[in-house]
Image 1 (cartoon, rainbow, N blue to C red):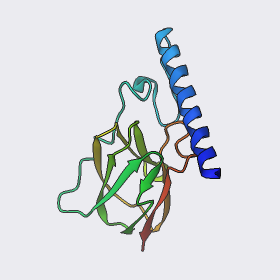
Image 2 (tube, rainbow, N blue to C red):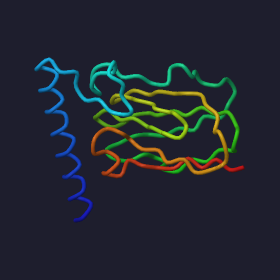
Image 3 (cartoon, helix red, strand yellow):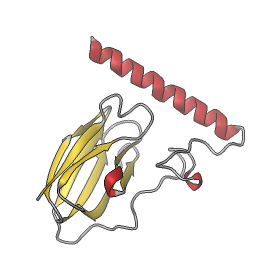
Amino acid sequence: MRDRGLLITALVLVATGLIGMTLQESAGGRGMQGPMMGPMMGWWGSGYANDLGRPPVAGAVTLEVVATEFAFEPDELAIAADESFNLSLTNTGTVLHDLTIPELGVRLVARSGEAATVGLRAARAGRYRFSCTVAGHAEAGMVGVLVADG
């Protein structure tokens, strides 16, 4: 019963945010902005950016993550520290999701049915929290950890 209540709360938060962003844009505003979104990004449904400056690394292992409502599968990833790798996000859900790892400067965004991949290197051994930064999604359970073993 508690999980159902969390899901309903998350859906209400998402719907409220989407309505507010739509009203703000239709009134001439610039939509939602925040630390993960610069002023040029607009709101989630209109121009979003992936880490296109970091193309996949040829021959490197790819860690694949699937986004659904509202979870990542798997929610724990493991890689050797300082090893180049690719991170891939596939969205099988019905709404837009992202996978953001602030400590590594990574943000992958995928609309429903889309996938995005970025090549990167873990800076050091450690645990790196990742989450979906769409309003209410992390609170609904879209969080995980990347473990870089050294």
